[in-house]
Image (cartoon, rainbow, N blue to C red):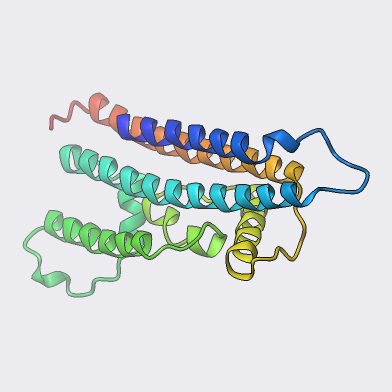
Amino acid sequence: MKRLDELYDNFVRRINLIFKETIDPFLGGGSVYGPTEIELINTEFCYTFIHSALEGYVESICDIYYRVMKDLFDKNKILNNCMASLLLLYDEKNIEKYESNDDFIRDAIEKRFTILNRNISRNHGVSKKYLITMLPYVGLNLPEDRLINSIEAIAITRGDFAHNLKVKIIKTSEDAFDACNDVLDFAKILYDDAYRGYNLYKKLSVQGKINS
C-alpha cells in the first residue's frame, strides 16, 4: 500500500522535524532554576504541532484503509474486518427494497462510509472521544491505555495553549520528548494494524483463487 507507506514515512519525518526545531536544543541542559521561558514556549509549540500532525495522520489512515479494504471486498467478496466493522454499525431496516444481498451490503457500506467521512471531515482532535468516531469504523484498534493517556495529555496541553494561551500544567522539553515518542509509537501501531488487515485478506483472496 504505497499511500499508507508514504503517509507513515511523512508523519515520522514531520515529528522528527518538529522535535528538532522545537525542543531538541533544550534536552539535557536543565537548570536548577527550572525551564526558561523560551524552553516553555518551544515546548508548547511542540505539543501544538505534534497534536496537529497526529490528528491529520489518524484521519488519513482511516480514509486510506477504508478505500483499500473496500477495493479488496469489491474484488473478492470476502468480508474483511473493515467492511464488517462498518456493517456492524449499520441500522438499515428497509431490507426488502434490495434485489440482492450484494446490493444490501454495498449500500450499507456506502452509507456507513458517508458517516465515517463526515466524522473525519468534522474531526477536531486526537483524544479518545474523537478516536472512537473513526478507528472502530474501519476495524482499527484504539491504542493501549498508556498511549491513550499520553495522547489525552497532549490534547489537553495543546488545548490550553491554543485557547487559553497559558498551560495549566507546566510541561518541559523532556515531557515533550516523551510525547513525541508516544505519538510515533501510536502511528506505528496503526500502520502495522492496517497492513496486517490488508495483507491477511489479500492473502485469503489468493488462497481462495478468487479473481478480480
